[in-house]
Image (tube, rainbow, N blue to C red):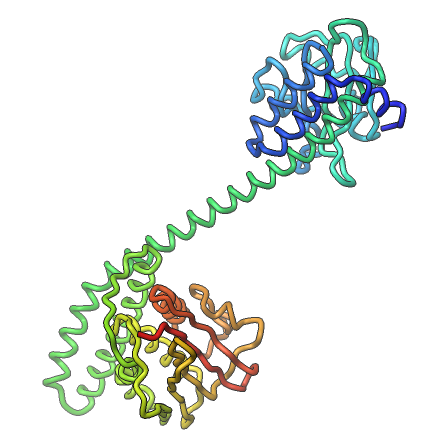
Length: 413
């Protein structure tokens, strides 16, 4: 816009005021359809003309399309493609220059298909590009000036409106794209939760039958048969443990995990958690070492749920640590909080994965070349259970092959 155009614009206080009002409204509105209608209505009022229209660029199909027009059905207009070549709007878009035509019908670039379709005769036209940063997103047109013809002052006025409109439309588009992406994520998350719920429910009954019969057979079996039934029983119990994890995750996500806090020594909770994993550690010749002081550190937590959280942490340490190694379980006071940790000498965690390991189903290893088992939800459950009780959980590691330390901070009772 030239200095002369700005001077002319400033000399029209009423129009300048209307532009300021438009700018404020555009910046406070993120509904794309409402924005488009507001822009065309304001442009029609500012230029005292019969109508206005907005044509936006379709990046997937290189062409323009009508996004809004005064007094027309936007859905029907959107069906009319406007080529970038051999059309007035296309010329404005390609050249990034405004165009004033006060005898449209004589211009060979007039795209008559639009006029014929909507039964609207265009006599005079002013079109300006809609710029945002270093690109053009569309064209804003005003048609059929009521008194006289379009001039450079009108072009300056419409250009200011088009610049504001381009930014507002871009913001609204970004918001709409973000909302759609969020909806897809929520749908996928709901499907995943539904699957976990159904799988946990439907598999539990047949699994209970398998455990029941294999327990009965194991009690009466001898020799090789006893070993076989024992393997079946162990596999079934492992499957039940997986189903329990899936069910816990679903309940956490649905905020249906009932907590019954009571005052207890943190040391007792950790010993309780270790009892269920002691046998697994022994099969791997691993030693669970308690680094407790004589002082008991009291917390107010749900004993079972907190033990479950530490059981998942310990299970993770056992699975990723080499045979014959030590796993240390410790507690100390940290101001008015209790700090507990589990330290192993296993495979370690790269720095960029320290936060990701708490994500649902996240595995450090590639899925096709895994050496370790697990669904990747144990730490997610642990994090949810600890945070639900006002605590904090994180992990520290010096890197691959240097072990890991999982730390939990809980309020002191």
